Length: 127
Image (cartoon, rainbow, N blue to C red; front, side):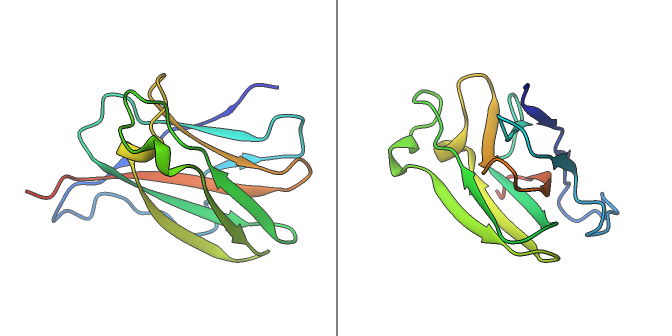
């Protein structure tokens, strides 16, 4: 099974640039042998990405996979794991310096059989 592609929304500082409800969630993961979101980050100008996860059934364990070095200079910090319960919405800001893969994606996985949703937002650089 192929990865589930997530196209992030680029946010602009000082501009209401996106209108999305929590129910929108983003790309959905369904029970499959490979439950991985591939969030297409390559070539963006932001250093941080806001990920939104919407729990759909039971409690889901999500693992944001450590990046490849290069380009991720902080990949040695390892994976990041969080739990999302059914009906719960969790937001987490991650840095590309830790999680960016060599192919320009950030990858997040969930256990086979779990179902949840994911959306991604590229945060603007702060000068």
